Length: 350
Image (cartoon, rainbow, N blue to C red; front, side, top):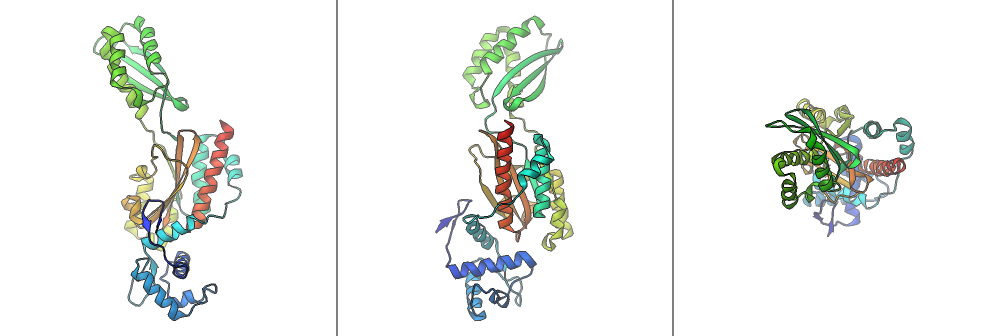
């Protein structure tokens, strides 16, 4: 037994069956047509008779790695077959995609442009649809807070968090606030909260700050609520490209299916969670086959994602979406290389 990258145990099969399964998947990825034993017998490295191959294919079907869509047709890979293919392939990564770093550096020198260009280049390079997320902060720390009175009864709260990201929030006050008190309030907030992330702003700290604020304790509570909301707030962070590439594959070009896929990419509906980061996530390739993505519109697709790093605690994701018969080897190697090049670019810029 061995574990795949989703933590599921898979049953090992012998080398001959694995080679036949790989041949079926390779042929199906290239043609989109069910694969018969006669086709597989032409693979010279197997050196097996059609009868032997038929027996092995029958075993693979019994094991759930391939399926026969029609009685007289050949076989196509099942999700389980793709999963074994991917897990085996990920252990033997040996190719790199050249020139990605040069393309990225030449075409963009700002983060947003770099990420948009990454999405575009990956779509062109792989002929699939692509997604790239802005970097997110696993722990968002407060760097600076500035209170400003907009009017007697409205206050602007400016919060600067890690990465010099600025968030603006407004508070409506029930009664006029004395602007002479603003410096003291700013001092109290910055002294207490500077360098803390949201998880460290606990009830004991809030109670202490309210005590120090005296008659303005209620306003402190309102300000802290807005700071928490600002720090937790996520921007529209997903860039996509090449959505129409999926229409090139017959199994995804059905009008209803294609409409759902294109709408999902356009509205980014449901794919945000797929591109979210776990708190302890590090670099790595994730492959989601069929319903593993938990995105209804992508149940007939495969999604491959990789995590890039700008600095410690600051991560983003790159994703590629295509048919289940996508060229996994090319996609994985492209993502690995892109991830490394982004790391280098961001390190050079920091």
